[in-house]
Amino acid sequence: MSIRAALLKTMLVAIALSAIIAIAAIFLQSSSSWRLLATSVVVTFASATMLPAISNERGTRLDALAWTWVSYVGVAALLVISLVWADGFFIGGPFEEATWNWFLTGIPALGIAIPALKRRRRADRSLSLAESIAIFGASGVFAASMLIALPNRFGFDAFAVTIIFLPIVACAACAAIGLRTMAARSFDAPPAATRAERIVAQLGLGSASFAAIAGVLLLVEQHRSGLLIRQISWEPYTLAITLCGGVASAAASNNLLGLSRASGIFRWLRHVASAALIALSIVISAAVLMPDSGRFLEQLVWSLVIVAGSSLLAGLVAMRVTRAKPIGVGAIDRVSWRCPRCETTATIPLGDHACARCGLAVVLSLRDDRCPSCAYDLRALPASTNCCPECGRERQMPARTSCAARAPMS
Image (cartoon, rainbow, N blue to C red; front, side):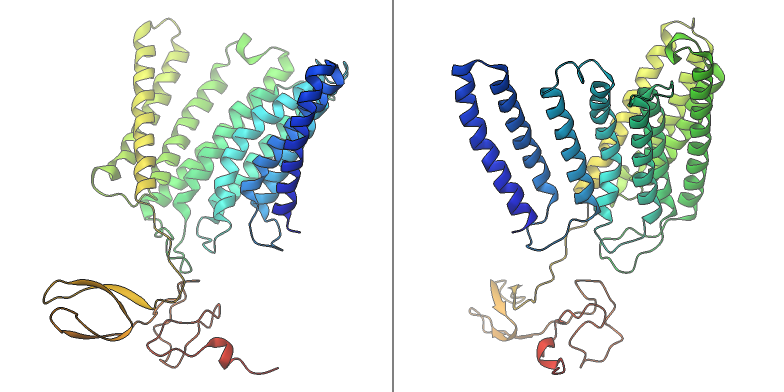
């Protein structure tokens, strides 16, 4: 039985139990029946949440993305069930705080790491640095915040760790996109980064590093003084985080939107968003230094937030609309054809064909010059090469010979 089938059966059983227990709880009106109902509902919801990450193919092992998602949802379900059955041990104590921190920190961390984990399923390794920063950075911040939220605390604020370092990780990962290389084994791989994008990437990574150092110093100083960050003004640290974070976020938006295949005015959105983010960091720093500056700086801050947010959103939508389409890898045995003489359209098979209206004859043959499975260049190979030497997939040729038939007998 596959993992997906077992999970699906678990969900169906939990749904049936939820219905039975719910009816019983209505008549019994006992706390145990309601807790059983809550447990079965949590199991149902957790199973349904795990399903999209697991492959339909029988015997397929869980990859890094599936393990990450299933593990997170499984632990979340166990924590919630523990709170359901708690009698004063979890409720109001550190375990309840850890449970809430699991969601408040884990969901943003997954939002940073999952896109990188999805790309790791592909053969394209051009964005490996950005993926590694996103995955290991987000998991490190998540682990640190959970450690702080456990019973043996270190005196730091878990929420402050999350709110400072997760955005820095996201900015560093997106800025590192500008250090990508040309990938030859993927049809939809982005082009190699330009010299300007590499400079922007290095500037963004350096700024993110300085912002992270300032964040560590801020937390250490807060821990040493025993005061919460919101109870005192920390100008040197907040200014450093704001200014360095602004440069890092500008580099991140510039290089992230640089992956877009959109043209025309949409190519300028990356520059508008980057300029607005840098201006926003400068205005916020001025507001920190001049707390009595009036409403003008506040209005300017919100105006820049709107400009930066709308530019980023429009750029991401354009990137999504113009994304590369998947390549079909199956053998082609017929094509849609329009007669150049009488403009009659038809679906014709490979080989000889005559137009049904005007009689114009055509000889149709197809050949793969790049493997549709692994993008291996087949142009330099002789015409007798019917199979991709890299992955073994059968090559589209005018007269094909089965790879299985050509394989030596064992």
